[in-house]
Image 1 (cartoon, chains in turn cyan, blue):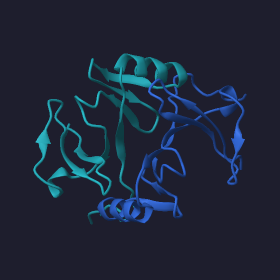
Image 2 (image 1 turned 135 degrees about the vertical axis):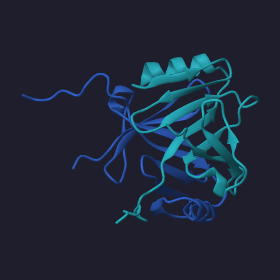
Image 3 (image 1 turned 90 degrees about the horizontal axis):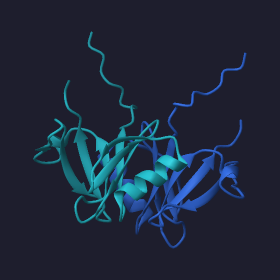
Image 4 (image 1 turned 180 degrees about the vertical axis):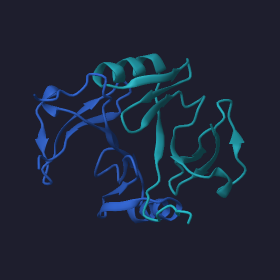
Length: 107
Length: 107
């Protein structure tokens, strides 16, 4: 008998992307103050991993600040596939905050 | 022999508090779109639990938006103890974003 996922399982928040002016400055500050690990970094954004979730630091003119939640992007629109194999759709919450519905790359 | 926590353990992000205009509207939108659980709600803020982390929705005139990371608030200043037994200190990152160093209530 196939086991169905429990309805009580809560969704996973993959990352929160916050606006910064200077990506290296933010990466330095967070990695100095906290135990966290740089997963990706370029001049326009960085991804920093904590024990349970990730923070992204974004230059807002290049990448919009957003909240990314794991789910099925197809249920919310036409997914865009990214170079790393993930796919996602952006929707807006009632305050206009960007919420990314993100499917990780299949392995 | 007491087991010491590993130095490589990453810190835990407890919650991210985002600005909203209308707390019930945000709670309704997120709980409709995602599997998440309302932990606390009043007119000025709400706390919503995902599988790995929590989101807070705050009226910014009442509660500042912030990123809360578990740690030792005493290492960063004079902690304020809250009614629920938690204690915390707020510091600012290089962009002026409020970062709360939060110690959960001892049980």
